[in-house]
Every structure is written in C-alpha cells, then in structure tokens.
Length: 552
Image 1 (cartoon, rainbow, N blue to C red):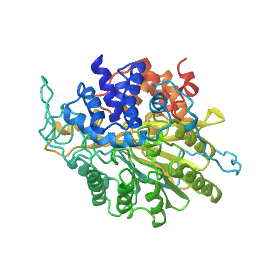
Image 2: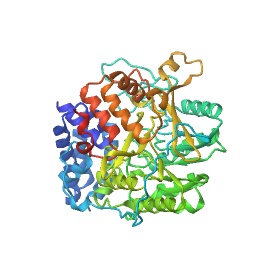
Image 3: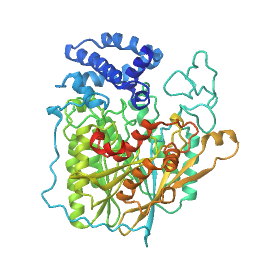
Image 4: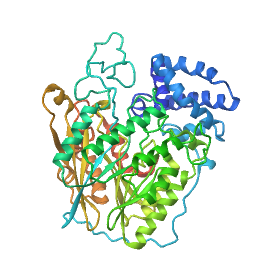
C-alpha cells in the first residue's frame, strides 16, 4: 500500500491522476494530496531553501520512480509552485478541495466569482436541426499528438520512467524487455515518422477539408525533462510537419497543457516577474501562429492565448486558452478570477455574434466538464453556454485521449439539453490507444454538426507488417454507429440513457471510447456509471446534480 500511496503522491505532481484514482481509495488520494501540498506550502511560507525542500520531496518520490525522474520533477515544477504558494491565501486543505474531485468539496469565498452576462434578454429557442443538409463543409480535428523526436526504434518500451521508447529509457528490473517498434508503442509517444505518415494520408485522402482544428498537446509526456527551449523546438517541429502537408489549408490552433513549462502552467498577466511570466511562450506563440491568426487577434494571443476568427461568412470560431481553468496551473490558487478576462471576452464575442446573426464554434484543449478544469471556471462557462445556446452550434476539445462527448443542460432546467462538446481521441498511442483523428460534416447554412467520422491506425497491426505502409480506416460514423436522428444535444442525451439500458450499445460505445484498442480494460458497473456520468457532465464536480438518475 505504501508504494501505491507514494505513486499517487508522485502522480498528483505529474498529472497522471485519473489512472491512479481508479486503483486507490479516494480518502487516501486526498490525504496524499494534502501531504504533498503541505510540503510546498510550508516551505513557501517559511521561505525554506530550495535544497531543503528537495531533500523532503525526492526520497518520497524515489519509492515510485528513479532518481533522474524525481530530481527532474522537482527541478521543473518546484520553482513555480513555491513562488505561487508564497502569495496563496487559502489552506492546503482548501487547495486540495479545488485540485481534486476526490477531496471534500468546500466553499472557498476567495475563489467564488461570477462573470457578468449581458443584460440583453435571451432569445426564444427555436430548434431547426436537420438530419441532412444541402450545403456542407468538412473540418479536420487533430489533437494530443505528443510528438517525440527522441523516439528510438529498438529501445525499451516498458521502461522505469513514465515515458519510454528512448535511448535513455532504462529497463525495468526483472522484466522482459519489449523493444520499441517502428510505428509506435504503448507507454510511448508519437514517432515523427508516424506523424508524417498520418498527415500525408489525411492530405491525400481528404482533399475537401475546409480547415483544421489543431487542438493542442504537441509536446511529449517527458515532463521531468522540460526546458523552455525544448518546448518551443517541439512546438515548431509539430507546426512545421502540419504546414508541410497542408501548406494552403487554414489552421485554427489552441494551447495544450503540455506545451508550456512546467506542464499545465500558464501564469495570468498579473504575474510579471520575468522568471515566472509566460511572456517567453506567448511571444513565441504569436510568431508561430501569425500565418493562421488574423493580425487583429495577435494581441489577444499575446495577452491571454485566445482569439477569434471567421473562417466562413456567418461562422465565428472562438479559440479558448483552457489552461486558465487547469487545476495544475498553480498560479490560479492565488487568484482564479477570470484570468486575462477571457470569459468576459467570450461573452462579448458571443453577444456580438447573436446580435449580427452569426453562429459560433468554440474550440479548446481541456473539456470544461473534465476533472482537470477548476470548478468555478467550469461553472461560469456552463452558464455562458446555457445563455448562448442558440448561437453556439459546436464545441470541440481534446485532452482526454478518449473518444467521448459532454452534454450541457439548461442551467435553469437540468433536464433540458442545450449543447454538446465533442471530445476527440489522440494521435499518440500513449496508454495504448490507437492513433486517431476526426472529420466533421458541417451544415454550412446552419453551422450545425451533421455527422462525424472517427478514423484510426491500428498501430499493433502496423508494427506486425512493419515493412508495409499502415492502413488508416474509418472506425465508425456517429449517426450510423449510435442510430442518431441528428447530432443535436437531445439525441446525445437520449443516447446516454439508451446505453444505460442496452448493454450491447454501451459495448459498442466502449470499444470506440478506447479507439478499438486491444489494451482497453474490462469494465464493471461502477466504471459504466462513471463513463455515462462524465458524458452528462459539461460542468466539473456536478455529478450529484446531473447523474442521480443514472444510478437507478
């Protein structure tokens, strides 16, 4: 048990919480959170030397990881955490309440805030969803690439470290070495060869793509080895690959939590200390995105990492920086109030769209209902979606590496679905999923999502026949696989309850959820409830209100 507890402690720093929580009791997980936060909290308040704090952390970490990873984790994360915690006004218990869904949820006045919505009355809702459309466009979604330019064929794929398949990866003691294969391996990120091949096939096969949603997490999972220079090099490598195969296709990017250093950190504009400010990243981002983003929006990117763009007449796309809701963005525990006024900007943009008859798609990396998103930010976003349900015709996210969705409900009537967020799986095979991408069919009159296809590469089959080029094939289309009349929020809500009653339908969804991976775990009753509840949860930590009827 001690090893599991300390593994949980380590993972609460590295961000791999979800897998551990399935194995460890919530009370222990929360207790470990408070133990870890207390180490850094006390050190920050007492101004303890960094070397002294390291002496406390590394021996605990060493129970679960080797010294290179433990020292790297500390050196990468500790400076930001200690600096932020100097200014934190809430207790470690309150921090863990905000950080972890497993901890008792407390009301924390310092972190209760509300974005003012418009005084303009909400227009009457008129449903005009059609199952077919006269005019359509196709949109490509790619996310969670996790490109690893250090991937080495033949290196160990089952190593001691959290990420394997590198020349520096170390073999597990007493374990049979499993060599890294040509097209990718579980516990490893995406080889450049695989990314290039997938992009090449997409470009050749889908010549009718109107634009690309490039939704974050280009960098690998080696978060104990991050440097600012290294992060920017990987970002450039990923963007260069995309431009190589899509030189003339518009690209709408967002920021993922793995882009910055340390992972998940995006200090708000009030952090001006040059040692901790995000300026190093945002200035580079402006340079890297300037070919894709309107010049009028580059200041928004520089200030807060968000922007607005109009890819077609009548359609506005709003790209959000969801690191401003990320629970491991440690600066938010100092002040979480609408960082960079992004949600206020979102309301303004949506109101302008409503007033001029435009429709809006919202893109981002972290889904607003995901446990990684802070509750107060998620609650405000949920209210905004409810108010502008007639204007928002699509939401698109990544981050989870899974094929799923989140239904949003009327904030005044939680039985009435009003919107749906589409969450696409990853390119990386990390954790064993098959590399995947999405093609959406959009009605270009109403800008509603008519259908989508999820396509995958079976990386194990590709490695078995490694001398041949792998096949990328359609795993499923949403309407056909789930017998949907249309892709409106009511249909997705009905699907949740159909899956509750129909085991075979849920089995089909579960297979797609894990991109047809042979590594997918078996599931039990509680696992099924958790997944169905997540599908109903466009708002973080709201399961009691939203999912009670799924238990009956």
